[in-house]
Image (cartoon, rainbow, N blue to C red; front, side, top):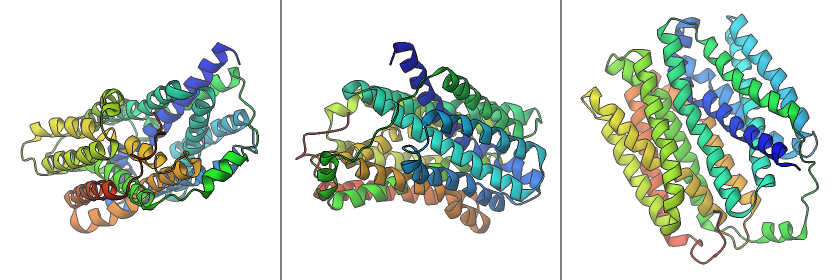
Length: 394
């Protein structure tokens, strides 16, 4: 495989994470406008976004076998067609059923695309180079979280209809589609090897259960918090939608910078101890945001929260990979799946809380979930096997 082709496949991976990040993160900014469009309460409207998150989860399960049956290039080309149909469905219909179906299709497309992007990086690179590429790929999720809420805020402030935000997100897939047409993709071979059989027989231990639950609570807490920040800012502090979208961008900008910083620092610390400290600090900064009486403090709280929480999820997955002597792909996928379940449950859990108790209660629930992550990471110190296993995902 020549260098130019490798570079194109790498950029497909980068943009695949950006696509998913844009779709998931922009929800909190456009939620109020979509609720007005369908003349529904915000809490009721939020439940329909479960279709987006369910689509992402379904895609992860689906692509576990699709990736070895349907060629990668064909999947991405078909995904482009689905993306166009979903965006047209959002733009051309005022029907809630069509909206929900379009959101599910967007979730499926982004989930499959992201899983292909992950595979391409792990296939093309090895060792430390793979680790650095994976980290940079993941940063595109945060980069999208910085750019698209700002873009959405600008469009909505100018009274441009919310579905044009999704049309702009669709441009990301246009780039993926063009790169796909120009690229040659690797052909997958059977992965059934004796080494993998040994990996599946090695017991995982209780630490995996703690890490899987921590991953679920962390993602549910993070997305449950950041999805309702714009609504919280506009209702409590009377900010306009552009200012509220800027708050979300503050969080994801700090998150992206934090990922780069901690990628250099984590190698000098015990992972279980540092993730416990970061979880505690994250819970504190989230508490300060919720109880801030002056709106001037909100950006600073979000910058601090984004920075200190940026390494938590990656560290949880890394610790999971170190619970067995030989890294088990199934174990890592199990923890990733639990995190994705947290994504799916975001509005299932927070929507009813907002309907009954208000937006502030949803943020406090997220704060409790972060405290739970801290407790789980603390308990992990008593059962984790990472100190006895020399192999780690870098």
